[in-house]
Length: 491
Image (cartoon, rainbow, N blue to C red):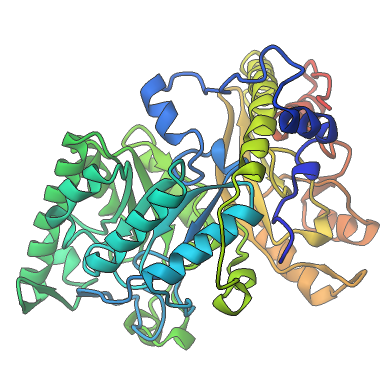
């Protein structure tokens, strides 16, 4: 079987001792069981989101999700979707996930849970619509809940069939639902959705968009009334709904949405979608961040989404789904909770230290008084630390540091530069272009060649803070850049 996506031993610099203690059933620290709860979050809400990598930016450093592609049927057509592929409404377009029966999905979930100790969430995001293909979705959730009762259950939907199943979702203790809502004005919706299939007939144009809008709002209100947390996905389509998403944000906040996730349209002609073939472009990173900044003060924003596949496995930003295809899964599997339980003991200790380091780092910035901001790209492979080699990074997490604090603002996907010990110049050119607007890159190690090319583009790069917590490293960098009192590095 494949190795865990991030090993227990690599989580922290002291993990050998922590893991040994966790596996022995005790903990050397009296506060090892501390939750690491973030300030300002209601305790009841924190209990729901603390291990959910999509609903908590903090949790995405430690915990993994997996999706099972059990729901291929769909009830709407989107201009950014080609039915040959996964539904781009709920997952990454242009890919074809391995479709599963509920029984096959159960085998896969147990196999992943045994091998990937970070796993905390099972989601169903299609590859069609999880609520329209309801019988398969429900059967999968019921089977998994019986075998792994502590795993969180989560689904994504376009919302058209959602109101019909809210009561059942509540009965199954599904407490996280994502709805893709791209409009609240049917005239805008008619530019996005050619047709819907509802109540045994097909509707088109403004009438279709009106029905979809009404059903989405009803489903959101019903979920809120039952205390089920909702995340709203919106696809940003320049010239179609980009300005309109401010109104969407207002509507969903008023109806109790917990998070609003604005995702960039992925419009590749090779995917064969209407938008792709018509030349509709997606937003660039700057345009996306500008819109997200304008939405601050409305519904709480999610900025760490990776638009993952309908069969994704692993930490956000990673996809080990191809390591767990059906041909690699045993025919007879039995769940073993040992690795997951030990991992959570390690994370409990790490989170306590991370929260303390974050508070100290943010406190330094708040008292800095420089009035300046810094955009920092971080190479990380999990654990909330600067722990990835520049040449091995497939994405960089982007943070903004200012006297207001340190905030996660997005990520930049890149092609891996170093393969087999060598780097390709063309790949490095692409990475430099992807990091446009970044002030400094933090990584565990970087060679002279990429550092020099980044410098030529006006981007600093350093490995001086390798393996520090991200916030500690950024605060020290900020202090060095602007001459404020630095913090001691946290090992």
